[in-house]
Image 1 (tube, rainbow, N blue to C red):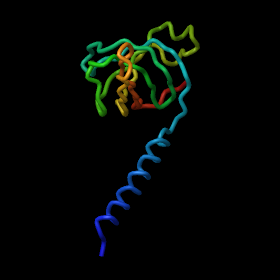
Image 2 (image 1 turned 120 degrees about the vertical axis):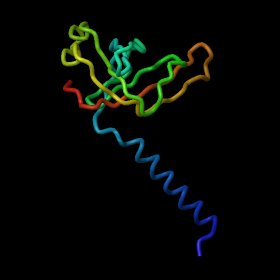
Image 3 (image 1 turned 180 degrees about the horizontal axis):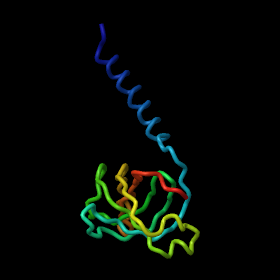
Image 4 (image 1 turned 60 degrees about the vertical axis):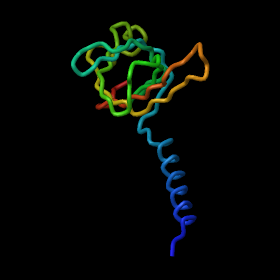
Length: 128
């Protein structure tokens, strides 16, 4: 017969397993890149201008000020300006790239630098 302690041990094992899986679930490598970008709602409203921290075929990461309401599961369009061509990222310029917020991580410990790190996954992998 299972005891509460047995259930706890199983739950902890599952939690450790899912945490390890989450850390390694990325299908595409990302590279550090500071690229200007804009985030649009699906109805075409500009939500935010930002600079990427990392980008890869499958997604990107950036920092956003607290208060924009960006949440896991929300979908947006990411648009890169034409000047990314001059930076060696010609395939990104022009058309928008649809993406879903996969991760948000609040950083509020430093009062002068409070932000949220946002991880987006592109609906269709980019060709870099």
